[in-house]
Length: 505
Ligand code: MZP
Picture 1 (cartoon, rainbow, N blue to C red):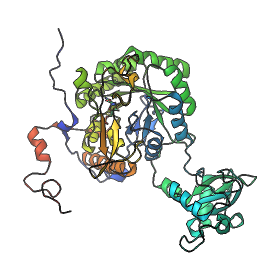
Picture 2: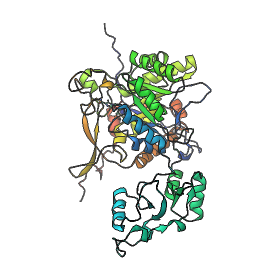
Picture 3: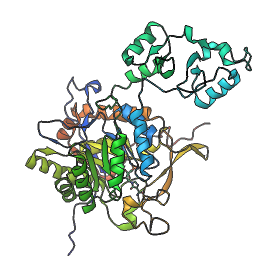
Picture 4: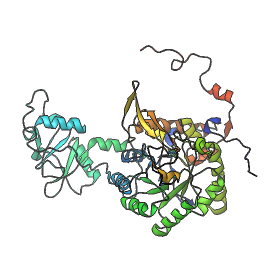
């Protein structure tokens, strides 16, 4: 006979945190959001940590290289999607690893005979107002000079004149020699009161540009997640079908962490896949897997499959219809608490701590906070990141508002049959859909959006008397709430300017 778990499957919005004693030291400035992503032995530290507990979902409409760069610069990590050819996923990874904030390859270059009008149209196309002039107009050509807004008057000068007439010629440009450190390049910029420093090789060819604004940007991103070579850290989704060719290519491209992307990870396929990675690339490669919704499945994946972290969640994703379509899944809060409990048991028995990631269904900052309080070491989100400027989809205007397309990996649009383990032989690529094709509103840049979430998280941690995520979860006291107290938690008995009163336009 079937076993029935009588405890109801619960979601994050059914819980609230009780405040703990806030001491004077509990100030947001003192809070650390650093969190492990790879398993470690008691008393040791993880081989890979995040500086903020957020990773972006391995999805076509979320995680491209622009997202990967922006998120790593804020301290998190992106898992580029594996529902694409191995080559293009590897190129995405390589783009992130080659992104050197500091030394930038110029993409707005001019030939000396280009006209001012052509310079203006290049500026409009790229948005860059600093344009090097090289002998052949290429990005690594013989450097002749530089043209910026300060060199000409758009409405006064002859727009048909050549840029060579208006540029600041090389003899008046302060430049650095190839090999100069970023620190020294910034010192040169400061000493000479310049905005941009061209870096030239021994033959006078342009190598790259260093910008003053990048220095400030770097100083404003103290949580940047970097590897030992000061390159941004980035992750990649993999599947249990083509890992023997995909994994070597991704590691060669520089991926720092891999994760099996599957709607149901409690399988022998993940065990075999991880074993293959371990025997071919050793213990140091960071590999995660999932998704699971029970302690039993967690135990199988860490004991048998030797994974570094485990993702929790089936059917809770904002674009997911797996529960409706197939009848499998579990309320995300119940699933997470079951897995965290088993993780803690495993730690007590073996002294090995395995980070747990809560994946999907987080529809507001409060739910993110509750997930972390319940013991998730980090959270994976799709919709949240899809709503930012940095997601890879184009803006669309619908009814006067701006949206971005967001679709599930189990939708016909994504055709990610590997994730859903369905036959690839059907003509459509999918027998039935487990995800929908949707739109989400644009809410801002990743920086702004994460800024708000991390500020709220740190504030709550201070309310509960925690300075680290470990203290937060170890000391968390949660209470279940009734429907009435949920209603009480919103505005009540007032006319809200936002919700109830018509706005003048
Ligand atoms: P959310 O943050 O948009 O709520 O959920 C994102 C998560 O949903 C992903 O990380 C993945 O685990 C899951 N997902 C992606 N595609 C589907 C689908 O098509 C899905 N059903 O469930």
